[in-house]
Image (tube, rainbow, N blue to C red; front, side, top):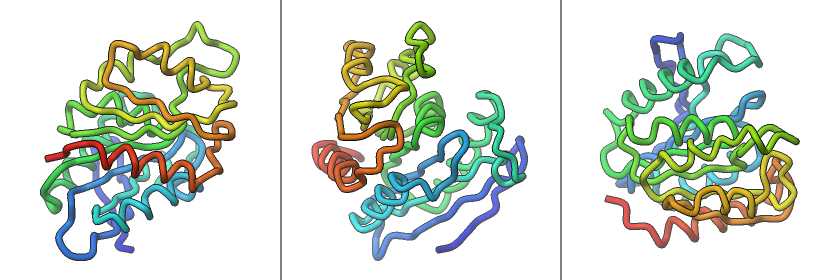
Length: 205
């Protein structure tokens, strides 16, 4: 798959792009978790399934990962780099824009959905709060999205269980799908089924 180095105001980012076979349905851009990369099993499975469904898929590595660091940049820097990368990718892929990511990458996708013009957002293992700290809720990041959003959450996720996420976003267009497991979402067949099933019910244009 083509790997594209993309300069941003926060340093060089990297996009691993899998072009759709034939005319693409649109662009699906996904980001990684805070301490992990694009090889997370759920990310690999979901992006492969979207590619098979006709999307051009881009896995985006943040500049801190490209620099070789495992310590994430602060949220404003993550958001700025992501926004610039997605804008660059959109130059080459017309049609609907689906954004998402796992954990920290899901937070970035939510915070920037309006800025990049996303039609839908997919969150894999959204970290609703730090483990053991439900008082530190990040639900506002989900509520601010404003477009159809899917959260695929492990039933035993210490960062927030599915029922916790649902209760926090009752006033937002957010669908929560519970799958077996924890924050790692290693039941990848259930995760991809949830994502593809939800997307089939969305009208993206």
